[in-house]
Amino acid sequence: MNRAIGLYAAAVTTAILVISAGGMIGVGALEQSIIDREAGDVRALALATEARFSSAESLMELVAGFPQMARAGHVSEITAEAHGVPEDVEVEKRQAMKLVLQNPDIEAIAFLLPDGEMYVEEPFSRQMNLTRTNFAFRDYFQGAVNSSSTYLGEVYVSASSGASTSAVAVPVFSDGQLAGVVIGLMRLENLDRFASDMFEGDDGRRFVYADQHGHEVVYSNALASSIGNRPLAEFQPYTDALAGESGQSVQTIDGQRMFVAYSPVKAPGTTWALLSIQPHDALFAPVDGLRNALYACIGIAAAVGAGLGPAVAKSGRASSAPPGISGRRTS
Image (cartoon, rainbow, N blue to C red):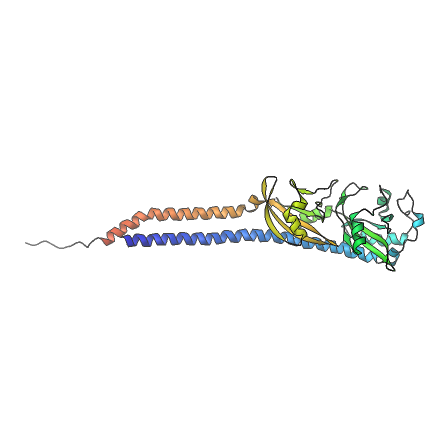
């Protein structure tokens, strides 16, 4: 009897262990598939964004290389009223610059003199709306001049439009000397729209672009520089992305556990960060559901095993009893 019960207990234990091991493998595989999917989505969006930046960069550099862009022969015609040269001056330069406006990610283009003074801007209506005429203090101007190469500046609030923007700046040289800087102002709202279109119908997930100085890339009349109550500069996924790393982590934001996937975005002359942020529990609800189902199966298996135990014991006692003597008694 003891042997039968022992064999039965071993069989039940083995069955539960097999169910547990197989189930946990399935749970782990599902969890990893979700992580891989989120990381893959962020990386795909980062690469697509890099392609958009590269397209704008190539077009800007093409136009900046035109011969008429290396000349600024009408500096004496700059007027305070026009905030640069008048609309009918530097017509060839303006025509070349208008080619850049064919790129939907660029809303305006300007030519700045080596000292940062405005010379020409298209559309001309934006030139007329300028509230200042010298931009040597801007990050994009300094980045292009100091590196002697194309540079995507930080996000800032445009004084003329009142909205946040960023600029691709290309230095222009003539005979080895700086002749000016061509800048293209980016339509930041396109980045948000691009992410939404790429992952249409994906609720609960927020994509965040952040520039090299810890400003969130949003199209608004103010700069955002924090995630929850933490500065972006102190947010580990952001710093890792700026360092060129891709990955994921769980962060507490405003008291809620959030799953954050991140990736660097290579931009002209610098690196931006792309973050995907969404509630952890909602994202991994299928994993929790599968894990709970597994626990239920283990519980049922244990209960069934325990319930059948007495029957096995009784069967063991019956099989171990000595055989009876049958036949008719005689005198």
